[in-house]
Each structure stands twice: as C-alpha cells, then as structure tokens.
Image (cartoon, one colour):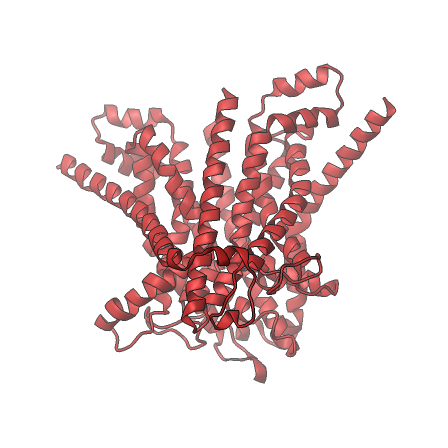
Length: 297
Length: 279
C-alpha cells in the first residue's frame, strides 16, 4: 500500500513540475533571445535598427529595414492571395457541401498542411520561379530572375491556405443552425444568409484566422528562402528579389561567430520574430477561445 | 436577381475548392514526375561516396537514417513531457480549471512559434552548454518544436474521456496514478495519432535542424556526432550547380513526400479508430 501511495505522490509531483516547466518555456525562450540581443541593443538605437536599411555587418552597420520591409511585403501578398479562396472554400464546405464531400475533401487540407516547407520550396523553384521569370515578369519589367517577392508570396499563400480554411470551418461551425434556419424561414437564400448572418456573426473569428495566418507567414523560413532571392537591396516591385527576416537568420546564423555584434544582431532578429508572433498568436487564440466558449454555453 | 447572385457565388466557391485540390495534385505531380527518374535503389541504400556532390555515386542513406534517429529521439523526449502534462491538465486538475486553460493557451502560442526561432534558441542553448552541432542538439530543438503539437493533440482526445470512466476506476480503490494508467490505455489511439502528427511535422522541418544537428556524410553512431537530415539533404543538393546532384534533390524530395503521405494516411486511419471507440 505504501509503495502505491508513494508512486502516486511521485507521479503527481512530476506531472505538476513538467506542467509548470512547460508554462515557463515561453518566458525562457523569450528571455534567452532578449538576453543574447542585449549587446546590440546597448550599442545601437533601437529605431536605427528597425527603420534604417544600411546592412553592412562587417563595418558595424545593422539596419533591419530591408528585411522587415521584405517580410511585411511577402506576408501581405500571401494573405491577399490566400484569403479569398480560403474563405470561399471554407464557406462552401460549411454551408453547402454534403458530409460525404467533406470527408473526401478534408484529406486535401490535411495533406496541404502536412507537406514540409522544403518540398514547397522545391516545387516553387521548379514551377513558380520559371513561370514568373519567363511568362509574367517580362510583361511588366525588363528583367527578373523569378526569385522574387511574388514567388515567395505565392508559395507562402499555398502554405497558409490550409490553416485559414481549417480555422474558418471551425469558426463557422460555432454558429448555431437555428440562426441560419431563422434567416432561411424569412425567405433568404443560402448566399444571403451567408452574407447577412454567417459572415457578420463570425467576423471576429475571421479576423483571428487572418492574424494567425499572418503570424505563420512571418516565421516561415526554408520555403521562402528558396524562392525569394535573398539580396539585401530594398525590393522595388513584386518582381525584385527580397530578403525576409527568417531567411536572414537561416542564412547567416551559426557561421558568423567571428563578429560578436553580428551574432547579437541575428539574435535580435529572432527575438523580433518571437515577440511579434507571440503577440499575434495570443490575440487570435484569445478571440477563438471566446468564440468557442460562447458556443458551448 | 438574388438567385443569380446565389449562383455566381456558389460557382466561385466550387471554383476555389477545385483550385485548391488542383494545386495539391499539381504539387504532387511535379514532385513525383521530377523525382521518379532519379530514384533508384542506390539512393536509399548507400551513403555518399567520394565525389558525391559532383555527381558521382552514392545515396542519401545517411540523411534518411539521420532523420529517423533524430525524430525517434525527439518523440521519446517529447512524449515523456507531453503525456504527463496532457493527463495532468485533464484528470488531476479539472478539465476547465483556469490552470488547465492557461496551459492550453500557452501551448497554442508555443505551437505558433516558427521553427527557425526554435532552431536559433536551441543553438543558443547548445553554445551555453558547450555542445557542438550534433544529433543531440537536433533532438533537443525538434523536441521543443513537437511538444506543443503532442500536448494539444493528446489533450483533444483526453478532453472527451467521460468522467464516469475515471470515477469507475477510482471507486475500485485505484490511486490517481493507477487511474491515469488506465486512461492512457483508453486513449492510446489518440496518443498514436499525436505521435504520427508530430513525426510528420518534425521529420520535414529544416529550419530547426539547420544549426543544431549539423550535416555529415556518414551515419551517426553517437549522440554527440553531427547528423544529416532529409530536408537539409534536399536543401543543400538543390543549391548545387551540378545537374545530377540537383536530380538527387528531386528524388530525395519524392522520398520525403512519400514518408509524409504514409504518415498522413496512417493518422487518418487511427483518427477513425478514435471516433469509433467513442461510439
């Protein structure tokens, strides 16, 4: 009996310890990254770091402007490309599709979200990049290698699409059937019901899904790195190459230990990504929790 | 008029869904048609020989085994953390207690953190402890990446375990720990799904292992040695100017895609088992 109780006690404490430890993991990661970016923050003005784009690590110039702009640019394009089809698809599967069709389609979304980033990168270099350099870009600009903001945006759009679709389907499912029936019984068509009832009621959820997708797009590394060119010049059009923050970290970190400030600057980049993404995630998860709670009550 | 609008938007929705399906099929088609010609037995049974990166003989067995060792270690570590945590927030604490909900929230945020941040953090920790890029370093970083996935997917199944089950076990005189053992057996298909999901995520991720696991042409025999991984094998070979090496990158992509497809379908299979056992 004593041994059973002892085992129970040990198990309980281990479980509590592990839970508390994982709760502090966020703080440990954030704190660690901040700690390592302190050297550069002490020497440089944070506004200079964020808003100037003079990037010459070996001369001690660390302006993240180009990288931050590239990240925002590519994210904007990917959301613009992914959101409309994702919304339409999610609406179709929550409002029109039969359950049999849903069963057939859900592996498509699962697979799209399961394909590793590196495969998207390979696919992008094989298809999107040549398509842009040979077919699309010549119509607008003199020359483009194809490794561009647009290529990154397209690949990223496909990667965040399944995320948006699955969250939207969850959000639409929280609207009770009675609400829709009330609208139908007033003579509204299905589309009118979607427009006036479903979309309006789920607006917070839609915003949450987009914010979540933005934060996913912010942090995506390998696939984007493989198709966006990685030049430190400021991109002027969607056919120019660009250099997002995660790609900067991936390309340089681990090799540049000889320049101490450089390492710290890259750590600052990682900290920047971390803090923005945690913030965005927290906001959208909070909204989604509220929606679900209301639904279950 | 309103019926015309209805028709137009319905057509748009069908079009969007079909496009998404077409994109997936197109991706698979490109990967298969590019990878298949270069895929041969040597690719998966040999390690790189001299001149491999100039197009000479060899395969990527080092990367395949490296990935398997890496994900095996990571699943072991993350399982020892995730299962107790998921059980704790559902059965020791009340399911809907504030503590449990805060933990779920924290894991949702951890789930959203990009792999490059885990990679950078992992590397930072490794420098702190004086570790070189090695299998162990990669295992630590990938564990961090997959723990949130595991906790949340075990949690999803654990939430649905009826209260009656725990009460029945406890009424027989079982301690809390013994009760949890019974529950763990009950939700084992859910645990399998969680493992498959995290294997799928961990095996395909390049950014976490980029700095932490390193790369090596030989098969790692100890935790302290650097290990090659499949995603990095694809990544490095694709950037080569030699055509044969690039073709091998396509073949490696096909291998990775096949692994992901198998994992995805087995996840579905076990997922169906869960919903059956609920009935």
